[in-house]
Length: 329
Image (cartoon, rainbow, N blue to C red; front, side, top):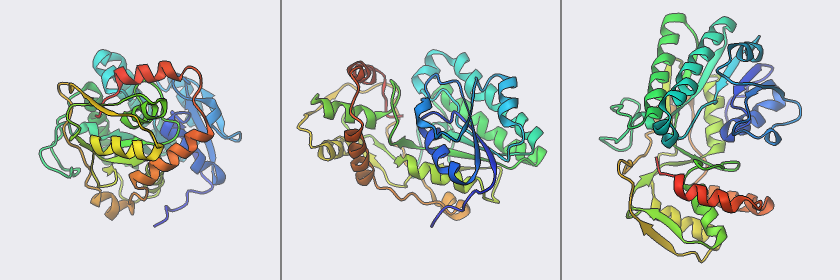
């Protein structure tokens, strides 16, 4: 089922030069006036089409936000500090970006009478009691990041109830795809870097942990659906509905890259979530969303793209940083 078109609208994507945001911008640009608000701390200007209006600034700055959002119809809010580890190390900074700035976005949306679609996270659930995880499952986040996203989900509900503001929260599971980089980019990026470098693919623990890996193109489709749905004030899981163990992932990465890297194990991290997987039936029913990209095909396309865009010289340092910082949450 194709996502309904968003046409002839003025839209703002906060964090639009980042991993997910830049793909969303590309999808929106052909038929809309698109603005991006990004401070380029982690975003990359080269990801953006030439005909996008770029406002370089911090989403926590009310003046920059007001300038970027003036007259918009829809705000896609993706600006965030997405690292669970960083939120634990710097909870106040994380809260300012992930929650306080999000309130500024919601207040600005009220001024503009604009729909808001926010990037939430499966981190709101913590250690699940049952699998797959539904949106009504207990929410027991295990990090400041998860707490902040859960609070934002509640604000999304309240702003629709109190102010009749059309809002939607999308709870992303483990997103992967092109442009995912940096020390907190996720296990798939780390495994691909290790396989391509001929280094051991290193698994924390026994590898039987499981995750729901969803391709960024499917996440973009979920955003487009959320921008047109009548089912507002709600949170939706965005995943594939299929769980993959970390050991299976390592083997799939090795096969996709043709690598002979050995798979090795090291001690697991205390507190890591053992299993995570989305029940996506609510998103299917109310948004008309189903993920299309299998992990195998997603990895093949990612490997093919990386061969067209070879690693830069400093990626050895990135690999070392990923090795120390990535987790499966």
